[in-house]
Length: 85
Image (cartoon, rainbow, N blue to C red; front, side):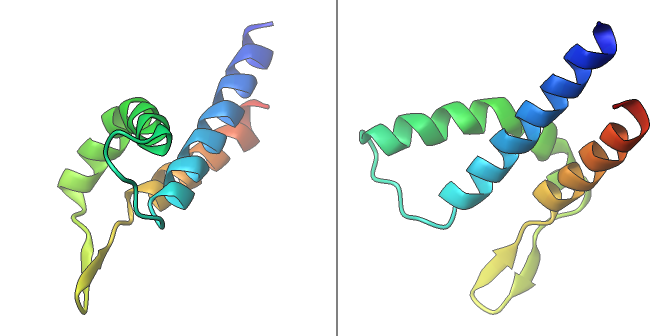
């Protein structure tokens, strides 16, 4: 029962992380419906991504930075899922 619930939560968090990654590719206008969705995803993911980003800051690539924190979280969740589920 708890194992199934934990697996479902990990699956949901994977989807939330992927949604945040995809939305980060598009400009979001403040006050739009997409801004509220992005704000919600940000609130759910930043407590996990923020500390990782402080340890491993985005890598500079020309005029932009590559944030590795979502990839690290996805890798950790995938490893957890393989051991738990």
